[in-house]
Structure formats: structure tokens, C-alpha cells
Length: 427
Image (cartoon, rainbow, N blue to C red; front, side, top):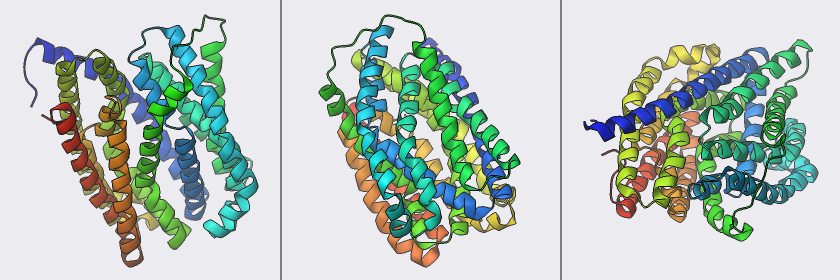
């Protein structure tokens, strides 16, 4: 699959050396993610995990919306900036925009938590969760953009520590401490939020504790928003694509069924481990090559990245599919009911991974509007399929909707990249 030659070897060595750190950090975070998931389901029960899942989904959607697409736009702009002082200036300018935008969800959920919990979701137990959501949104956004700053300056280790390691360890520690003091299931969500907030403070201290020179690039706030807004829309529909199933199940099915589905979803999406890990490597590299108009090298990097992801992903996906029942049993006998759901989700994620980092490739090459349109198209398909399949087949219907949507969306992405950039991602 790989061509021979010195330049190819250099490309592969670059991907493996940089990607290796990303793989390790993600493996660490996933291990802790499953530890925390196992801890909540076994010590608090499926219902608490289901409620926690709904609240976390809402928080992630709000953070995605009110980040305004700025984290991705930041990396796109950074490809044309080779000055750390200017990148810090861009970070502060972006942070000011985010601070203003996050006031909206803070006010809405502070005063409307009762409406959302009792009327929208018809679950009064979500009231306190949504109150926590209201003040958590800006911290979620700041966490992401700070980590994207580390990607832009190619500090992969710093990125891994603040995006994966610190939040994972802190979340697990908080869970154990809260359970030790016999605190209620509501504190599982507080543990997650607390880990993000503390990580943000540590990162800000690291970046700005020294009085270093900061200069602002000649990029206006309006220019940032103009580039970021289509990315924001894309991000919204990507989150909805991933979480529409949970939200619609939350309206129709019981907390236990939601907990089973979310567990199967998280296990199945392990199949995306390698392609998502490569985002950290490919985003700044594609942005840099695009600003240099070096499309020959860009094609090579994208092809080798996708081929490497395919080689690594297929065994992982097959392992999850063939051992699906045994894996789910780790979370309790009740979770075995999600076996078929897990298989369907894994197949959809496998197809996704085999097409490569398609959305970020287009985002980093000034084709963010195409990404927005594709995700909107996929969202409509997913909603329609869920409306039809969930009432008939429950969580398996939601998984089938996810599989079909993944295939359609990624085929369209591959075709658009061929038309825009002149090559397929995998060859």
C-alpha cells in the first residue's frame, strides 16, 4: 500500500513519531474513560449513568455551538503564522470573543433549567445538572481552544497532557472521593465539570505566568468569525450526528436503555481511535502546506495518513465486533442487550475511519462551507432515520440509523475532496 522512496519514508516516520504520542495519550484517556464509565455504572447504576450522559451531551452541544467554530479556525489561521507571540495574541483575541458568546447559554440555562428538565426532557432529575451546565460552558470552550493552541505550535505532549491526561486523572479522582463521602449520583457530573475547570486554570497558569511579549496578528475579530462561523455550523451538525441518537432516545426510551446505548456507542467509537488521533497531526500540517501552496506534499501526507489509519483500524474494529458480548459484560450483565447495537455502531465507525480525516482536510483548505453543507445533509438523514427506526427497533434502530448516516456522509466527503483537491484521501 505504501510507495517506496526516501520522501515516503520521511513522511511515514513523521506520522509515526508525531502520531505515536497522540496514540499513547488517547489510549491513556480511553482507559480512564472506561474506568470512570465502569465506576459510575457499577457503583451508581445504569439510571444515573443515563442522566449523566444526557447532561454531558447537552453541555457538549452548547460548547460546540457557542465556541463559534473558533478552535478549528484558530488552527487554520495558525498555518500562516510562524510567531509564538502572535499566536498567543490570537489566542487572547479568540478568548475574548468566546467569553462574550458564552454569556448566552449561561443566562439561558441559569433561568431555564426547570423548563429544559421538566418540559423538554420530562425528567425532573436533570434540574441540578442543567444548573451546573450553565456555568460550565465557557470552561469547556476555553479548554478546547487552549489545547488547539498547543496543536498549532506543534507541542503534541502539552496538548496530550491538557486534553487527555489531566482531565482524565482528575475526573477519576473526583469520582472516587465523592463516592467515598457517600455523595449522590449528581456528583458524577460535578466530578467531570470540576476536572475541566481545574485543567483550564493549570493551562492558563502555564501559558501566562511569565510576562512574555504578546503581539496581536493583523486578523480582525470579524475575520475570525467569518472563517469560524461555517466551522461552527459544521461542528453543531457533527455533534448532532453523533448525539442525536442519545437525545432522541432520551425522549423516548428509559434511562437504562440510554445507558446501554451510550456504553455501546462509546465502545463502538473506539474504532475511530486512530483517525481521531491523527487529527492532531494532520490539521496543522495540512494548514501549513495549504498556505505554502504545496499540494503535492499535502496529497502524500493525507494518503499516507489514511492508509496508516486503515491498517491500524481494521484489526481493532474486528476485535470489538467479534468480542462484543464479552466487552459489554464488563459493565454488567444488563449491558449484553446492547450487543447488536455495538456491532452496528462499530461498522459505521469503521467506514468513517477508512475514509480518513475528511472534514478537517476540507476545513484546513478553506473549504469549511462544504463541510457545513455535508454535515447538515447528514444530520437531516440521521433525524429522519431515527424518527422511523427508534420507535420500531429501540436502541438497535438508533444504531442502524448511525451506520447508514456514516456511510452516506463519508462517501460524499470523499467525492468532494476529489473534486476540490484532485485526489482521493486513501490513494
